[in-house]
Length: 74
Length: 401
Image (cartoon, rainbow over all chains, first blue to last red; front, top):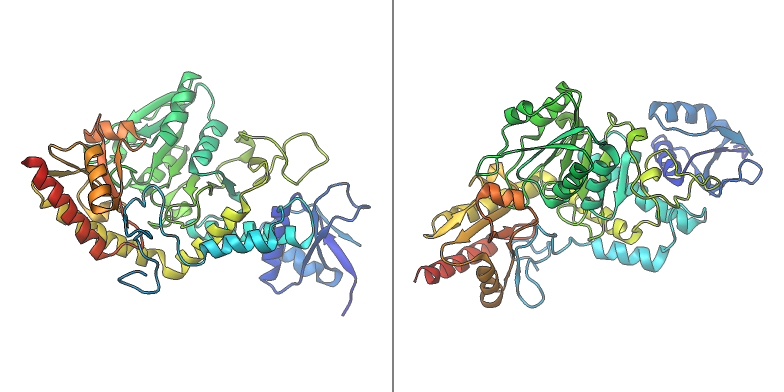
């Protein structure tokens, strides 16, 4: 199993929670972490996911009309 | 312990008084509510959405799950359009002050609580046009009267779903239909119905649903909010408060997305943890079963009161057409005297006088003294109702002497 991670960037913790919830519906593991400094000066959180899950994640977020600000590899 | 069901809490206080003031706030709270609040304060405690450490995330998760439970209850499509505030008054103020502009027209009814009426009267001073559709003497609204009141500049229909004075229900779906047909927004004050009566935002055509957490959602006071339907463009909602949201912290301007834009300041997470437990209890018991129980008790009370000489009951007199809120008067005894005697001699806790709804009292003909109001709840029993009827019987006998 690959341990290469990406983060889903969001506007607020509420959006992160929504993402956590809809990804849990398809049994995808997520973890909320502080936004890495090199990605943004925002003090908030982002959702850490595995890079290999990104296609399924994009599909699931689109299906549930969840807004996010992009996915960045870390 | 509850006499009818040992798994439920009792409607009697520690001192043995009978609680019949559920229309003001529900009491007792179901098992789990206090524990959830205590557990949050003692074991989590952190500020949600402000930091990314695990306790902050746990706090944020409580709030998110509570949004989800509220959205599920009302069939709202998006939990992020559930906005929490101090209470339902806060939510109604946000909806009305946030949405309406001078020169626009709003239709409301003569049965509204001051939480709708006062913001509207304030906005009227600033140039809003307001029509207050008269309801029948039993509090019933005829949807045709709403259509008759429409003007080219009508923007919003704002009604309560059940009167807080006498419980009379609004034909919500018919009014929602009118709003849809004419391209208007529909705001519903669900203070007496959220959790007590089925509500489906999408089928009922509700665009803005204001709810309280501390009545039939069984949470603590200090919880409530606004559910914003998808026909409302949030860009047209002005936040009543600006401040820290934990998001877009690099900007000095208020965020423009939900829920953050309307939720400045640290939320009442302990209260929302309690509300989450209340909603979970409600889902477990089943709203329909609770409604059936309350409707049964309400019918029993209406029937008992109707048979007492000298007692006038307000509203439709039919339990199926009202929330479990019953208003009445005893001939020859002002409601204030009746309230004092019910408390002191019978240990019955209820509300008397004017119930923050002067227009409703005018409609029902109970100005200036108001009425005695029994607010029934999920934990009341048939014994409670029989005891209350007997107490009123005795007061009525003495009043005519």
